[in-house]
Length: 338
Image (cartoon, rainbow, N blue to C red; front, side, top):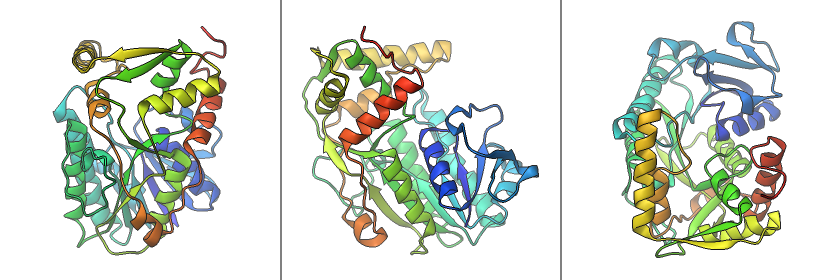
């Protein structure tokens, strides 16, 4: 299949690009001009004008520039839309990228590749926090700006269901090599600290990035009803248990660091203010704080198992191992205790 991946240079996108390329698909990627391609290292990337069998064609463009979308979309049999903004101190910025970016891509896909299977990467946050493992029939109830932008992206994608074959994925928290969001927890453990958030512990569903990409592949290859939605997850843990597992594998003794709810909110507000002033995105932010303070993030994958044959294989413990090895290899994490 000819498959276009947006956001291919990111954490999930780079893992998906590797999977689909290794599976023999004709992969093309849409990447912003000047974007960091480090996570795509080792892959056979060539400019689109020099595309040839066995190579990954790189198209430079942006969702906000519709004139850059026609070429990568033309002839695509599947589109997997991952490009988006995970965190920002601005609600408008999240909506401009995550929601309106989806609208721009769907509009272009309907014109240049109406036969394609369009897979949108949404999020568990579009449904909102839950401790009781909801299924796909649960109403959308986002509790933060990021979740709101993803819920709007879903609504936009579904509005194209009569023009495109739409499928929506809602992954839980993703762990694995290349991830920066969970890296902060590894760094804290490296320093001998274990967070304990006030009011916790809270259940949290997780999924290894390679199992997630397997789910995306199943969705892209499937010709099911337009508008169908799938939760994708595997294990359920808590932040405290995750950090305990990281500490075990790093062979580190940790000191419990209690964080009262008001303190976490204050720190997150300060971090967002610093981001607005400096442009530097800090590990802590409003989105992360709101997600950590939610009562839980769980979902049921019964439908994905029954309909897609989704069968995630990598345990959370294995994900931590894979992440730890990769972080050290890439020098994202010190190799010696501090």
